[in-house]
Amino acid sequence: MQVNFEEVNFVYNPETPYENKVLKNVSLEIPSGSFTAIIGKTGSGKSTLIEHINGILIANSGSVKLNNFTIEKKKTRKENKLLEKNLVKIREKVAMLFQFSEQQLFANTVLEDIMFAPINYGISKEDSEKRAYELIEMIGLNKEYLKKSPFELSGGEMRKVALCGVLAQSPDILILDEPFIGLDFKSKNELMNLINKIYREQNITIVFITHDMEFVLKYATDIVIMKNGEVVVKTKDKDEFVDILSKEEYNLSLPEIIDFQNALKERGVVLSKLHYDYESLLKDIMSRLEQKNE
Image 1: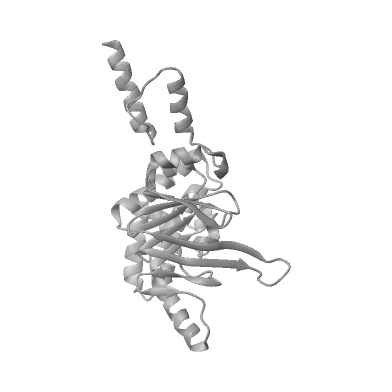
Image 2 (image 1 turned 30 degrees about the horizontal axis):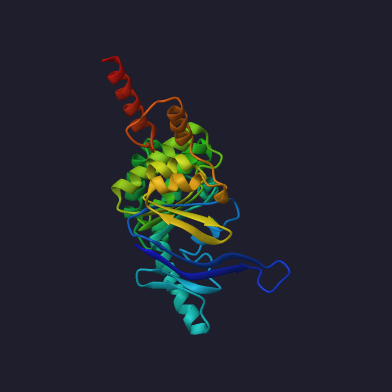
């Protein structure tokens, strides 16, 4: 499912002393089947932007289009009633995992939590339970976890279960708003590997807000940079992205993997190319060492 923002403007507390224009004439295409990373400093408008995709927020002007659906401000009661009906259909297809997503858990058991969304959208109890068993297996947890309270689990396990809860409705788009906040290194990598597995296997569009540039380099197919409520960069080219990160005007940090390769270059180590993940970087370094020892 493709998403198109067309000249979207959004203001918090309009026409008050606290008025804050957060999105400024944003036009953006998020391609169907893409893994789109949205980055920018805190306050750049990232979270506000993605909350327009499933109608949590509705633009003061402009529109958001998802296939045949259009989300935009309506004037009449009849139009608003139709929009509310359409938003139910949209939210069935657009799932969102918020920051601190363990706070989305609420049921007595993991099974009940995962089954909630599909049952709410009219899926039978039997099919919803089957889906829960499939998902718990997919995230690498034993089916016995389904009987547990979600609040007995570790932080990383709770995030995985929350992810199952939003995937249970079989969405076309998965929105992730900084899903790694508060997780340790191991849990963060496990969750990212799981998200990438979902992307590769389930024919889904992912929209991903993060401050972790390593993950952006390794996994994103499309990269969007926001600044002061505007989209200032949209690219698929990772070399271009690295060049942009080097510019002070965006106030973003280079990933450690790029800093490391720059340090190698300064010491006279010539690599075959610029690497975006440590696996390929290590292979290149080992190849250079083998050539040196021949």
